[in-house]
Image 1 (cartoon, rainbow, N blue to C red):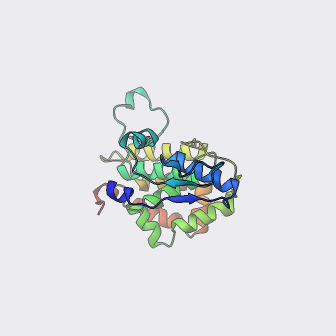
Image 2 (image 1 turned 120 degrees about the vertical axis):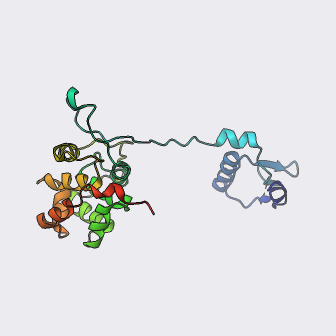
Length: 239
């Protein structure tokens, strides 16, 4: 790699180069750790050349920005009663990933909150769960949901930037809490799945997520059909 970098040709800066172009070249060279060499003692930038040489490991290390990743272990549900805190079921890995993708979708659309529509998109972005497959087989795709979301809620201000973790709307929070309650009521072992999450969205009658699902053909009969396999998601593989 070093030999290749040494063999790169230099980029001359001529007298015809505009001042703005010169500033751009200087900025690029500074950012990349390159050197501006002057071939002859003339004024301004005339006769200078941009020499591309290998970067030292030290300069590269200084310019690298750390990558920050957030790993979720659970979802933000209402505080349980102390007597139940040690008995709460865990969320499945797919449900947790779906929630993380929901936050990302809210940020992509520059929305200030993570709503039920974002939770729905998160399930489809994750894509490997039984719930996501059920929705796709029914013609409910990420593209359609995203399009319906913009039609229903509109576009955000282009200069607005969502927080890193857009807070849940009240309806989205209740959808998560519904999923936990439903799992507890069932008395069955296992995790809270994306099916619980989707049916939690469907339980919020005035939510954007329900309206979008209904507009795309989802109904109570399909919800009942999906509910029959509510606990099966944990046995699916990620292949």
